[in-house]
Length: 389
Image 1 (spheres, rainbow, N blue to C red):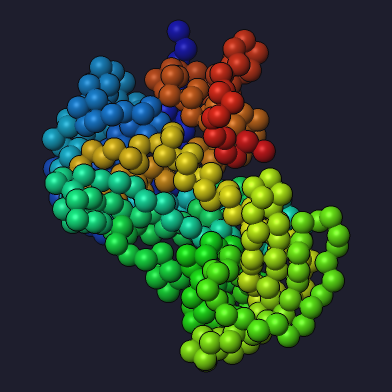
Image 2: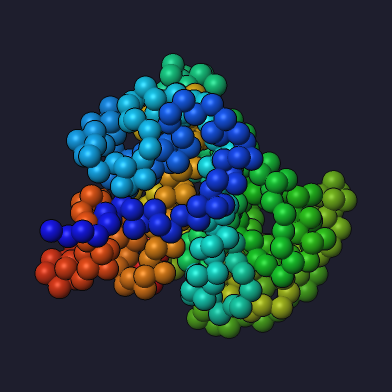
């Protein structure tokens, strides 16, 4: 009989316990725990994320089926759907938001040398949001339209390794551009955004902070050309201009010159226009930076496919934010595990193996050795992959 530790425990081992309890104490999470602590809550919710549980009843049934093992998995409280529902309602969601930031600080250096699709040594971020639809009758606090509710997950993604560095959860009504007020630009870094973030007053803050941006231009922006630069033929580039804003109000809040790069995407037969405050990079590199922004779209699609953030275990704002933040923390925990163990498997494969071996008492490396040597996990051609470099 294998006397080792369960695979689930080996995954949770990568959680920094000291920092975890600091987050709990910061918001008084265990002040009135009534036999079910924040650690019990995190373990149950992380188990649900790793194994794709559908509901609180599903979580309760699965964990109670192995009740004799729960103590060795780290659980100290009694598992029931009502207790877990109460914890999701009562324990402040900011505990899990802070825990995710702790895991981000651990994961980012591990992926600092990943490729981003452009020859650039600086840090590159992609800013975007995704909408998660909700039922208005169950989530009235998240009213989006007259008959619809939704929340938005705003994410600033480090393109080296697809690690989220900044996340905010808002109701669906808020405009994406408002999130720029909460982003603190890092000097020397690049921020790649779609045209929904085109606001010249907010973009000028990047100039003042010595940071760079690449944003797709809208058709109605009025610009006057000042200088032209030659562009290489057959590269897809159409032009590279130094421009200034023609509109008085826009020029008042953004008095500096901008760089406009026009590019023809042959695959989509589409002309794209980019604005940036960087005048040193090659024009083709600017186009490649915007192309790398697709990683944030891939991140959103990946977590919606493989984590539980589209169907929720509770209906309150606190319960929804708790579930999303614990999903992000679980994603980061697995990303850290992948690097620390030097696993060659993709994150998709890692999650699949963990989901079916979660209670097995076997070294996690041995589980992947068996998988690699005997059975290759099926991977549909349209299946999204992430962190598989």
